[in-house]
Length: 467
Image (cartoon, rainbow, N blue to C red):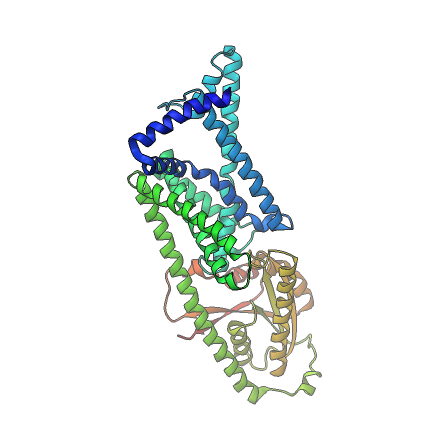
């Protein structure tokens, strides 16, 4: 009986719509309504973005989660639509459709029971939305960290706090949320447009990326056709929704959304261009440092037999060099120490802090490879120092904050070294870059301030980066 009643309600309405608007017009209205309420896909987005933190096997877990979400969302949406149709729910200027539906359902109940039921249900919906809103603070910083690791965002956003979370990303998102609330004056319609357009931009790009992936894999993967069809349909749907929302909501905040998003995209592109230029110049610095080392080796180098006789002189001054990976900066700092303090610093100790970020904190294998690299960097520096006739040792550790890790290591170093002098290199660009302090770290200056309080001398050597 209920199915017949639903059919009697829906069929005449659909027939009238087709008669007045035509089949394509009716389908267009349906797709428009679909696009306006397709924000429910954001739960699936949260699962896809959060795959790195799911239990193994991650793909299977994510697939099960998405299937359960799809089934539950479909059930809820169908139930609501049926309820709207059965109770002839009309749009209210002051109430949501769900509130109108609940009041219609409980109209024949006792006043207090009905009011309690409606209040509890609406409060539960609000609380659920509040919890769902927090997924942005879980996935947003992780996405920014991935972008930072790929040099689309300042590198410091890839760093982790002492709780192994992307603290800077959380703070940035919180500040941005407050600014948006103040600027929009809490206007929900504007915030929803801002949210919807950006969500479906990411959906469309994700589906486009998957279509491209399956097309590239067509000669290797026999299942490519199925994959490209599924993601192709997804691309059409999400693309249609994106275009629909932009067109229908352009005057209601759509243009502001495109302006804000476009500005961020341009900014990210310029950040990556900057990092590419710096990477190219650092490569030149490394080549120049190796060339300089070869020239220095001709005058000060010793043979392998002599290296074995090198020993630590506890009564001689010791140069403690802070390095961050094996490269032109560390090598240049080493040779500047040897040349500028010739015959003074007999012993050389290298300190390498492996900074844990979102790139290497993805699993046990990544962490093991990272530790191996940190150790290998130190062995290379020892080899270069030995070849120039200096006894060298190496201390290393890994952590989220290099300054805190160095400060933690200092007491142990000072107990074993009588006359230490700390050295560190700081890159100096011939051309000053905008937002340089944001795009590049200045760890050595923070270390200098910490060690000054302990009365430990720190010398910062300028490393000129070639054009």
